[in-house]
Length: 302
Image (cartoon, rainbow, N blue to C red):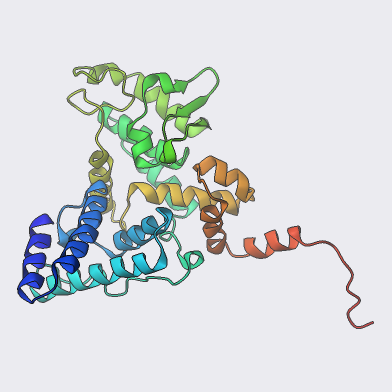
């Protein structure tokens, strides 16, 4: 990806764009590249519209103003337009990239249905320690709605099996929070802990999730695993770690959970961030509005 970014910057420099403009483009594309790498994407040809939609949502969550998001979007669209013209990508994933005027219009990627999540867990292999580790990781991303960075940062002493609690230490915004461990993640946790010793061959013995070398699991591992699952399982959409967190938020709303409870569960600093999910559940906005309105007889037709 970086090679294509460098070539693009050289091209626009040759076209006479100012140093300040090129510097701004470089910063925006560097931020995009870092975001995509966290999702296990290192080639422009692997980028799909859902990745860029997620990036736009990330810009909102970071608190960027509308004008800044617009600049990011325009840079991304032009970057991929030129890559397509050069044949570096077959189709432009940014062609229909939405850059909404208002934050409330920004929606997360389409969530997985509850049946899709159940099917994925049911079909997940359980033969090897790596299979069991990946299944636990997926449960943490979905059942506990952990962010990717939060999941790979977990240590063994963050888990309290007796109380069935998990402690997220130094989450987004530097905040800690306690999470309940429900049946699905508890089962996956116990299965993994039974075989975890076979992975203890490196320095990170306190880390919960270990790679085959005994090191703390990296961010890209589950992303690469999900990409393989997408291909092998015949999924018609890209699976990525943050999608499970988004999906759980929608599923909680569908089951009638209070939006403030979901805010606490997700660790959102602002309720407005959580309210975005209301727009993805038909009927919930009206239900919440009706519940909040005083019962006043306005005497229509009297």
